Length: 115
Length: 114
Image (cartoon, rainbow over all chains, first blue to last red; front, side, top):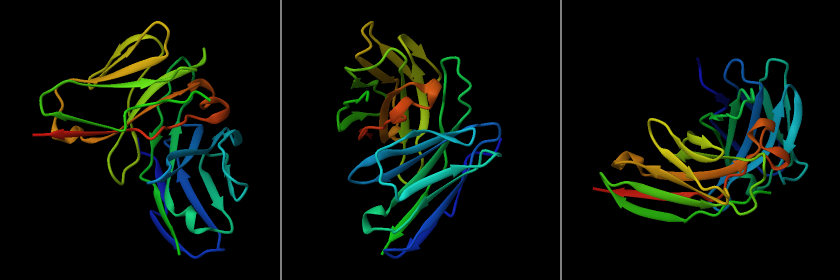
């Protein structure tokens, strides 16, 4: 099986712009989660989608949004970029099939730099 | 929110067994405990997951006491390549982590020396 893929891998934007990041989960996985990783704050949960519905949401401002398509691919959007949005954005997928076991598979991340 | 507390860093030597303990005093009934490993510039990688008692796989063991307020990741005979950040997470894995998702703490930076 192919792993989780994220595009683009690197991105440079300027303040005030918006950006869209894409994530393709492992085939058959219905849950996609997004995380922001920075040196100061570590790995922070953004949101999780399951079967096209946002099921969980972290403590981020409304500038951060996402969606999931019927094929489970997901996108996240950040509007009105700020310098502090510079980070590694990680996507993770899981089958979430229940049964007391759930492993998240992470993609390589998108490195966003805001100038 | 089931917050976790881990040591910020640990040192050990090749061939030694390393135990990393994580505290999660307000773990909920539906929460599972999961450990991930992360190398620089890579996404985290699943190590092991458990609910209670002991779980063992080919790379690690996870010890969870009866009160589930802590857990210990045990790495047998570590090598230099085990130098990484290790994260302990608690959450309701059957609902995507629950209302707060699966929350990563700051992790433990494990450094293995020759």
